[in-house]
Image (cartoon, rainbow, N blue to C red):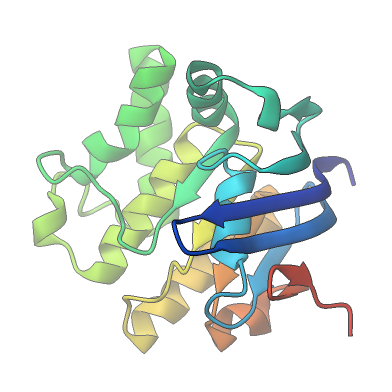
Amino acid sequence: MQTIIEIKDLVKIFKDTAQEVCAVNHVTLDISEGEFTAIVGPSGSGKTTLLNLIGGLDTPTSGSLYVDGKDISLLKEREMTAFRLHHIGFVFQAYNLIPVLTAKENVAFVMELQGRKKEEIEKRTVELLKAVGLSDRMDSRPAKLSGGQQQRVAVARALASRPKFVLADEPTANLDSKSAENLLDIMENLNRQEGVTFIFSTHDPRIMAKARRIIRLEDGRIDIG
């Protein structure tokens, strides 16, 4: 399997007037194409910070972070925005759908930003919403969808750009048990059938049970015990 993420001696320190907090503490880690991996640990362990660093949503204090062979820690803000658009998909705990757009329009929006052709956008949008079981809700706005349905739209949107990998930060946290199980089945199927790489930050034992690799963090360090 090709390595798509290479993390070397990564550190993230947050500073305030009172103290410094080392949220990610000299982490070294490789992630390969096709993984279904969960980053787990107690609250404050650094897992969301690590996910944000991998996604270029935050910048490291020191160390290097290569995505698809490029050290994204060196990219300027505009370069990082463009890199995320073409390489990384995101699924957030709070869904983050655009409320005035339909499910179909939310998924299509990413590809429009990429400058894809109209015919390609239409075809891929329909394929993705069908893949997540929402072919009958394409014209519904987020307010008319359940939490589970909104998160499935978010998964379809994350895949729309054909990213190298998808980062999912506590994607089941706001879902009931049945919706969470359905969402996980969909993501696991996309991983196994289409080779989509998923990296989760989670407390959810259901995700941990399905993950084929678990990375445990404790106080910002990888727990190898």
